[in-house]
Amino acid sequence: MLDSTRSFAIRGAAAICLMSGLQAQNPPVTDSKAVPVAAVPDRKVIVIPDGTAIEMRFAQPVRGKMLDPVDVGTESKAGDTVRLVSVSELRINGLVVIAEGAMAQATIVKIKKPMTTLVATGLGLQLDWIESITATHIPLRIFPGGDPAPFMIQVLSTPSGTVARPETLRGDIIGRNAVDFTQIWRDKHYIPAGTRITAYVHGSSELDREKVEGAQDQVSFTEFETTADVTIYRTKGHGRDRPRVLCDGIGRSIGQHEYIHLNLVPGKHSCRIENQAPEEIVVERGAEYYFHLQHSGSGWGLKQVTVGEGEDSIETADPAQKE
Image (cartoon, rainbow, N blue to C red; front, side):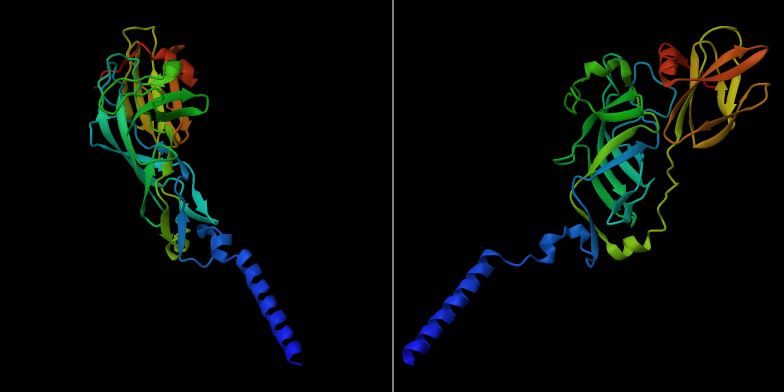
């Protein structure tokens, strides 16, 4: 009887040890390991992961020191801040955390005076932040990884629009000139309003879930709406004439081989050539438009041309004289 009892106890102890060993080899999976932090439904915060890509547009034109200045904006200086806006909304777990049109900021940290017109913009920028739906500032950087850093900016005309990026063959921020030679023919020497640039969230940012949920109706910002970049130019012909062109009351007289730049809000606009009936033009947010002012019959007309044709036409032109 004693031996039987002892045998049963030994077998029971062995079974307990075996069960413990199996549990040690296969620990239970907890919710926190199975579900990413940002997706846990009962968490009180929503996390925007580090490295999240955000596409933005410049909400204003930016130019530095140029050998052939364009008639747009004012010359920037180090320390100036630049306004940008998000191109589209960013959602986490179905909730908008950054709205389309949300305001963002960059800072000009360096202005290089170009040695030749081949230098792209001569502008050194630092991306600062973008505003979340809860009005907190989310830090940004220009590269997918690493720390926020200043960069020399290059602006290119592409079939899908104007884009900005760090110079691919770049010098340092203290003044060495740098150019991506494969892209020279498409470079712009300033940053037009509407130019797209991709930024990345720096560090994981936590937002209060209750505030995010309460702000879902505020998914559109218009205070810093991106404008359209409109250029009206003349080539040659009727040399002494200087027809005055006004769009919504803004503009000036344009002579031979001259042009004007206008930043217009998206929508319909009335453009009037002096002593003629107004013409209506329609522009979209962040887009570029070129209009050739040319003689037509007994008057003048505005003919819309492609961006490429417009850029080629004003390459040797001058800004129209201010009145």
